[in-house]
Image 1 (cartoon, rainbow, N blue to C red):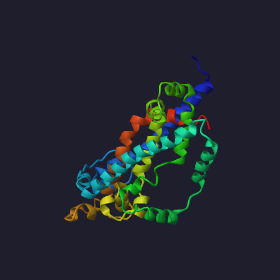
Image 2 (cartoon, rainbow, N blue to C red):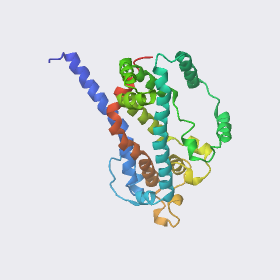
Image 3 (tube, one colour):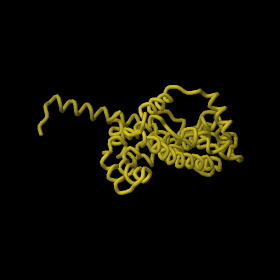
Image 4 (cartoon, rainbow, N blue to C red):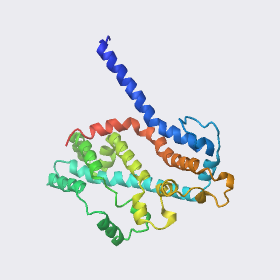
Length: 290
């Protein structure tokens, strides 16, 4: 199929723009990975860092050998896995009835739910609510307050509306109740949007740190991001990783920061490609009907 000169020029500009965009987005990760395997002198060198010219594994040895970071990693994995599964489950329980036309006053319920997207009590009322519920210094504070995302539940509701009513009617004729229809019919047909919302929820849980700062005092219940914050922002470097640091090792602050950043980011980066194929389809189909 022949293209005009203007079309070929547009394609060339588009490809060039996408290549530049990919380089701009990927270089920070390559830079931090290079710094994490570098010596102090190499880490402080000006210029582009695509690979370490002077290799050192000291930073990764200290990061991987630190008990606090593995404790935070376990808490983060717990909140990510449990929080994502519970969030998808409870949002499905809310989205399914809202998607059915026979639910009385469903538009009123939807408007009340949408109202919560724009108005909230604020930080101080939220803190007192969490305290009154007995969730302070509990790992459940990572799960329960953010159990349902209004925006995600509306996308899930819109997707459920695209499922033909005839499928539900035939299932009811066969004797299936609402729960069986939801788990054996609706959810299996909704895997693209489920995967997309699971990715959103998982990334949100993985990157969350503010709720841990507000509600958690026990160091054993802190998440990985609060550990990262202490290392990168507050400047706690080698003293957190080793009590017997030698004088020659005092320059490893920057490689340790880079190694901690990469340790925090790599798990979610590894998971993303497995869900990417569902991402665009789930977002577009779930937003077709209001």
